[in-house]
Length: 291
Image (cartoon, rainbow, N blue to C red; front, side, top):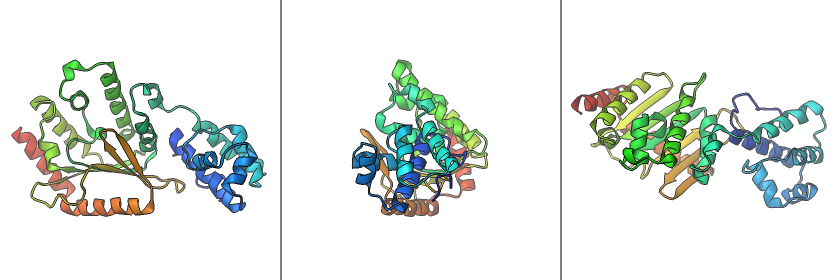
């Protein structure tokens, strides 16, 4: 694959750019029949560094990329410049990096990938997904029910959550499909006023054509998934689908084909178990009227 193929303006985050550049470098290396160890030796680096570069998990030195392109036989100035420019942009900080002191390191890649996704599919058992939370609801969740005790770290995390939501309001936003357990819409997080406002916010959000919410009622199986998860899909062919599972001490990224297939099967079953989007809207409205 040529260095310019598949690289479009929709690759809007440094995280996505790193992955695209890395995928292009791997493709060019394999096309040239050069091993990772040989490539590493050429730029005075280890084989593991080449692996991390190709996975998009480290930043790029422009000189390293230029030297690798030469090694791989890429001599056309225009072709080289496309990838070199992407490498430069990949080193630019994302908006979330100013919150690094308050954001766990393991969550930073997710922020960049989420911003670059063309489709976001998520399943939640306890809370409204972060992309659909009101500020008051997010404050209740982040402060463990003590919003009046929010410290600067908590306020920074709330700001990050609100900033994440801007992707849903931009031109050509990603499609968001959220499947919620019925307990999510019934649990009065933050108290009655916050709960009611959150339910109304969900109804308002689902009026947008790119946002779909389905609710799995109590009387359905509940066996489709054992924990919350998110699946990110991308328009760029260089970017693989990525699953993400959040837990109390960190986050797990799932990228292997068998892992993505398992997530896909769970999502298919959830779509069957859940109420249709319209019936889900009516259920949310019913809970709102009762609260």
